[in-house]
Length: 451
Image (cartoon, rainbow, N blue to C red; front, side):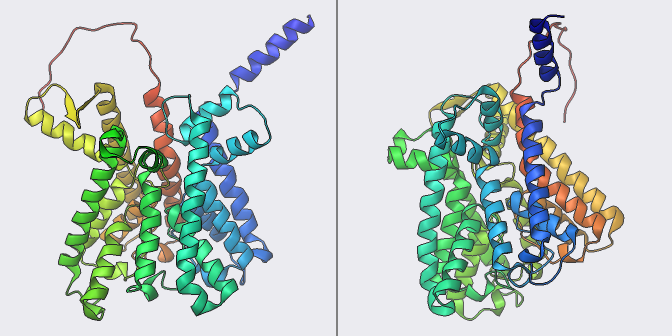
């Protein structure tokens, strides 16, 4: 056999066993979780020993930017361990391939087609062009927002905790907020700052910007005019503003007299600040300034719906995404109006985009329903609490009604699976939806009866 034939056969073997981009991306996240869990398990990372399973759970929650935890992060981990968690949050929030491409570009190494394919899945894009430009935009926006957040939060925490600890708290929570992670270093999350104006403005501003998406933030910075913005940016801004306003009014209305939440606060000012914070945090942020477990069932259900929606595409947020919800509503309205196409802000939407939205939503609902079903098999807790934890995990939110800390190994494993699929699953689904194949056989039209 000649050398040329051996080389060709070798290349053929590599092509045969080459994983598709979504599978490669999922493995990257999985390896990051395993490595992060191993580091967090080391004695240098903890103030008190934790099990390897607990370390893996925290690592999964950090890489998937969820924020659910079975231990108090601030008292369990050392500064080194907290730094590891912060790095995992940054890696998971901005995307693992984003960091890889940035390093390759800094070293002057060209980014090949395999890396571009994986990066496309990581950034939830359909095209391969301008990906490296998008990477630079992502890092520029992230660094700028996190530095501004650090400076703002240090105004509150440096006088209270001193320069070293205050700056560390500000840095950690700034990164956690912008990446929509929800990890906090205080025992009651951010409940001690329920009426602090700086905390209530800075933290939500960070996770709203992170949840809008890097494309939207960059588009606003470049265009600075409503008419010049892209359709995606307009839909995200309108959808985000509408959801926040609705949630703010409804949370205040439903919880104003509840002694376990707003009713236990002093004065209408604190109640309004808490209503504002709890209206925006279900958008996959995961921070809380009141006791989430004390909310009424109606407020809990509303929060679950907001967690399912999440933030925007190409952002640090999870969920089915705001634009998905908007397209679903537009499609429903168009059906009742007997319209054959969708129009919004002077633009039309293709049928394949509508089908993609329907498929993503259906698969997401099946995943959530399957997770809830699996949890109820092995746990006899309150049904709404189990639903809340599963929804929070899939939406990579991190809000909890206290059930996560009470789950056994099977329950925690299910939460880990939901967090992983909530972060990686939609990207994998999007890849298969974006793959086009021309039908080889055409069948005659049939009729079924619906409704």
